[in-house]
Length: 55
Image (cartoon, rainbow, N blue to C red; front, side, top):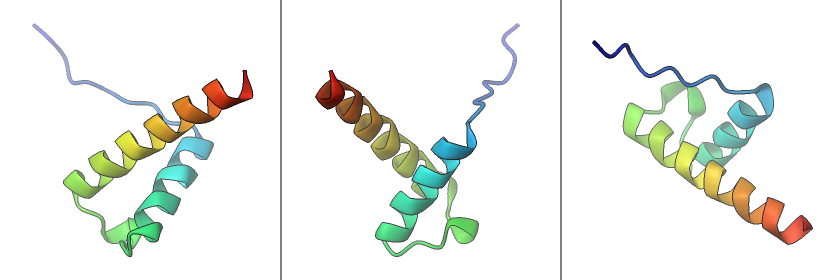
């Protein structure tokens, strides 16, 4: 049996996701699940690009 998927985020990840939401005019405390998923993906992709640029 598979348990629930748990995503543990750092404070930095949460802050970046909230910043992404705000940049699209979404108040983080009122974001829907779908909006949070989009923000998480944008944040993840942005972080990956930033890591590649620093190399």
